Length: 443
Image (cartoon, rainbow, N blue to C red; front, top):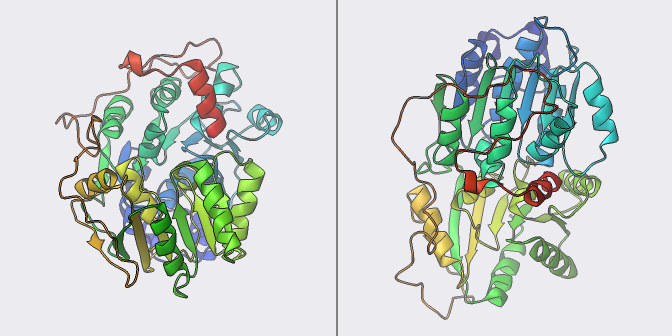
């Protein structure tokens, strides 16, 4: 029961009003750990309630008066995408229904004016994407002098999107006595590296390993000879009435638009979702999907990360993901909150290496299925490269250190104005300014 987690009555009332009675396992373990004041690094599959696991204890902390005067945020939540930032902010509003907190978002793709006004006002909790936040920091518009909690949400995706330097720079601008919380679906490689750098003796919570199956999700693969063959297999599944709502993933923005138009032409109510769309259009598309106006949403990985749409019965990988970890995040959009789901992958001639990487990461071979009348004419390759060519294998833990060092950031918590950006330990990986600006727009 939530009332056993030492949360304030105002928060418990909001939790009850939201229809929740029993905490999920990640909430049961993470909330007491965060309330203890310790740094926390937690990993769990998508759809397990990670957002409430850090929002509720953060709000509990905000119920106490700030020890420092000022207008800067007391809690900062960093998320990889605009959609996830908006979703987290909505959860904050939901759980603070019976308490007064000032919250807001700073994300790319929208006007600067409301954000400038927000940052000039007293602020309790700020949700931001790294690119746009860095823009404001470089102009001296953000004061972190009274920040108490830094949250890195979906940390693995944030790093995959190229925000390593931005995360390091933002963390270095925070007071050293802050509490840092890191939440991620996977906990390895670059995520572990950054955790060792910015977290202090964290409590570690691990509820999902990469080789753990999504027990509520039925997964299978169809071997396709060509793109045309993929379309035939996809059409077969979409004519199945059990597909109530589906999220279809493509590799590119152009591919998402093209496929959505093709499906609409075949009388399937469809819409595309990708990073080239304006924030307002993306929000409208999401709202229409939630209202059931669309049966199919064709999306790219960046746009779809963090989506929480109830009723997604199927996730269909029209294109296999370039990064193996994204498979885990993709299929996690279905089978959420105890419901059952289906994940179907269409594997064409250029997808076998990617499938191999997924199976290596998850530690399981995904079931192959053949549709009568749509059997492939070619056989499955017997030998496939395990890491997709010359790329370094993903899903591998680099180094075996188990200790976590303290943050080496030298910030005194003062405003960021005039402070130079710091390169990461791998200096050659620091993105050029044009790349950073591109990431800011994407976020």
